[in-house]
Length: 108
Image (cartoon, rainbow, N blue to C red):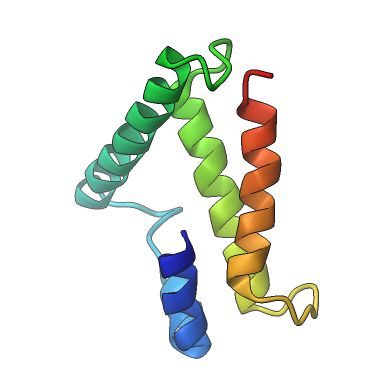
């Protein structure tokens, strides 16, 4: 996550163009298949955490992946567009968002 954030922070203007032109909400079949594979891989990571007893087992692992990407995407877009006019780095904003998300998914 921090490496992705560093890459986005390195060229904010380019990253904003990439996010704005994303096919995320208008995906063709090829893009949709790639995105589904990404979700599947992350869901597998969450399933491993569930098997180890680290994460809640009452939440579907694919939905966990969906929530992860939602938090990542919206936090990144808000940072790129200076929505909150904050001086915080993207890495710190993402770190905070993921801590909140993972706390809610953790088995306490």
